[in-house]
Amino acid sequence: MGENILRDGYEVEEACRLLKEKGALVVGMNCFRGPATMQPYIEKIRNTVDGYVGALPIPYRTTEEHPTFFNLPDGSCACTLPTETTFPTSLDPLYTNRYELAEWAKEAHSIGVNYLGLCCGASPAMLREVAETVGRTAVNSTYSPNMEKHFLFGSDDTLQDHITSYKTKA
Image 1 (cartoon, helix red, strand yellow):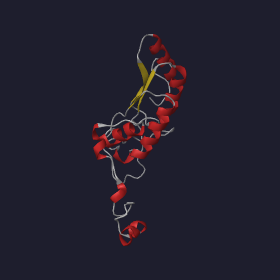
Image 2: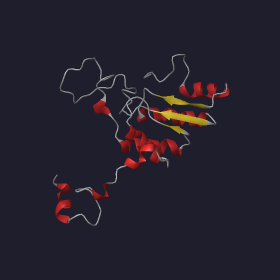
Image 3: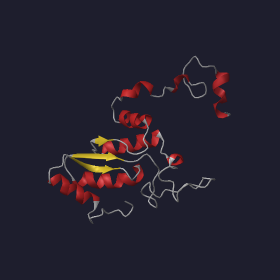
Image 4: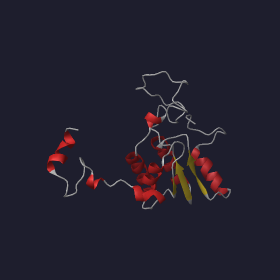
């Protein structure tokens, strides 16, 4: 939760150490926190535990002030929400994008996280980006964006200058 300590009083890395000592094959974190607020704990776990570490954040922009997705505000919303917070049905404008997730996956992979994924709210494209960032091919990798022929942002030689010049005016 947002209290930064588990319900039984343990710190996350201590709980993971104890679980590993009791025979857990993989320890880590899943859900509640986005990449930005989960990663510091994943680093502590990785520094505390030998063996497999897993990280599966939610794909939302959590912050230190709002470390979980349960109380994320949407300052741009001009309507009345059905609940006091964006959770659970109004989270969509608070998504991280695939490039933010790729940066997180690269960082987590570089410190030795063995099991990477995403939790609640993740799309197939988001999961594909995480997989491809760490050198894996996902089932849907066939659909990875190829912007070479995009009419505004492409780099293919067959694209005409009078079209691509509009990218700064679009």
